[in-house]
Amino acid sequence: MTLPEVVLGVMFVGLIAYGLFGGADFGAGVWDLLAGGTRRGRRQRELIEHSIGPVWEANHVWLIFVLVVLWTAFSGAFVAITTTLYVPMTLAAFGMIARGAAFAFRKSVTTLPLRRFLGASFALSSLVTPYFLGATVGGVASGRVPPGIAAGDVVTSWVNPTSTLGGVLAVLVCSYLAAVFLCGDARRDGHDDLASQFRARALVTAAVTGLVGLAGLFVLRADAPLLFDGLVGRALPVVVVSVLAGGAAIVLLLRRSYVPARIASSVAVATILVGWAVAQYPYVLPPALTIGDAARGEATLTAMLVSLVLGSLVLVPSLVYLYVLFQRPSSVGDPAGPGPLPSSGNGGPVARSGPMMGS
Image (cartoon, rainbow, N blue to C red):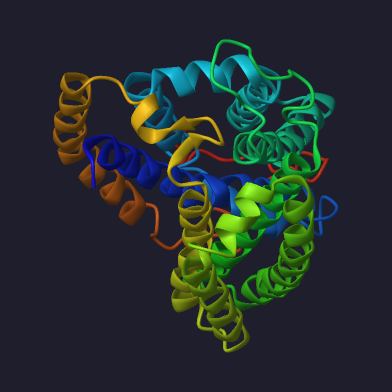
């Protein structure tokens, strides 16, 4: 394995981490949107808020990590992607800002119309942001981002069949991950009824995702033949692992084994991303820019790799400690707890002070 491939591999680990943790974060916002009316959806929203409250900002560390490595070690590819796909990337950035601001500020407002506006902003931005991120990935994977500054079409680079497929799959996968994760959180806190509700949603979302994935193969065959050939060629073993892990996750959900289902679901999603990378190898921007051609000089890559190793000594233990801390049981719906949250009136809860890092 060459030095550029090592650095790109480390960056891809960060991308997988963002897909898992950030994906579940976005998906929780989608379930917040679909929780139902104020009274009926109150307990679901309380659980969602408790689950993502400590980590909704920390998860974006992985996205920053990916962008910094791409910018520093593969700056030519970074420039080509950001100048061709700046529309969906900007929309995704606006979605993250709107989502974070709404999540934080709706805790402090007191007027009902403003609470409703912020609740809707949080939920809707949780839906559209992963779509634009998926559309961006689709534009790169389908070979619509040529090397150079703004060399690709600003519109068709992300408004095309593969980008649409990528956006829809991103929303579905995020929703599925969130539902599986929330099953475990609800069980841990002793709310088996909520666990059953999210279990049903996870199973339905898994079925829809599988159908879209199968239909997507025909889309890729027609619209992105290079990627399709890679998926059914050298990446086929990885795709098979993803399918098997997804099947195992469904069985575990049916048996209400939520913690193993989390692991199996994470493996299924991670191998989807690995399959994409293997199918696209050796290109960073197919079919013109290879990993070797896109990489900076050896001195830059070496310095980057040393910095990543040193930084991981601080970052990884800190994030692990954070994830362990927020897995403590909550008092959602517990009569002995601090009591139910007052409703925002639009289905979005008004949070009390507590474990929310973003408050």
